[in-house]
Length: 183
Ligand SMILES: Cc1cn([C@H]2C[C@H](O)[C@@H](COP(=O)(O)OP(=O)(O)O[C@H]3O[C@@H](C)C(=O)[C@@H](O)[C@H]3O)O2)c(=O)[nH]c1=O
Image (cartoon, rainbow, N blue to C red):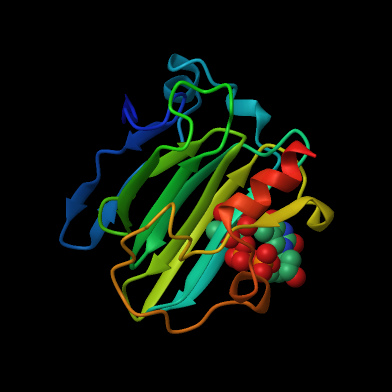
C-alpha cells in the first residue's frame, strides 16, 4: 500500500492499495497500521466504522463537524463515487482549497480527511457503497451542512442530483456557516 500527500489539502493523504487479481476476482488490503503510522497518523484513533449505500446521482454533503471536528478515512468499497474535500481550517496553509477524487471498488483507494475539512460525494454508479472510519463517536448535535451548490465553492458535480437528504437540500451557504462559526 502506498501513501501520498494530497497537495491541495494540508495533512490529507491518499492510500493506494495493491490489489491481487486472479480468476476469482481480487484480494486487497484496505487498512494497514504500519502504513497509517508511517505518515504520522495514529491508526488506533479510529473508533467507528460505517458504510452508506447510495444509488446513482445521490449526493451526500457537504458535511462538517463542529467542536473538535472529526478526522476520517473514506473509501468506496463498491461502485464509484466523485468525492470532495474542502479545507475549512482557518489556520491551514490550504484554507478554502478543494480536492476531488474518483474513488471506486476497482481501486479501493482511501482518502484521509483531517478534522476541520468538509466532505461530500456523489454516487456515479447504480449502487455505490462508501465506507468510513471516524476518530470520534458520531454525535448528530455536531452535524454542520454546507450547500452542495455553493457558488464560492463551485464544485463540478458530474451528474444531475438524483436524491439528497432534507438536511442537505436545506443547507446554508458557506458564508453563512463561516459567519456562524466565528460568532
Ligand atoms: C454519519 C452517521 C450517521 N448515523 C445515522 C444518523 C441518521 O439516522 C442516519 C443517516 O445519517 P446522515 O443522513 O447524516 O448520513 P449521510 O448524509 O450519509 O452523512 C454522511 O455524509 C458524508 C458526506 C460524510 O462525510 C459522513 O461523515 C456523514 O456525514 O445514520 C450514525 O448513526 N452514525 C454516523 O456516523
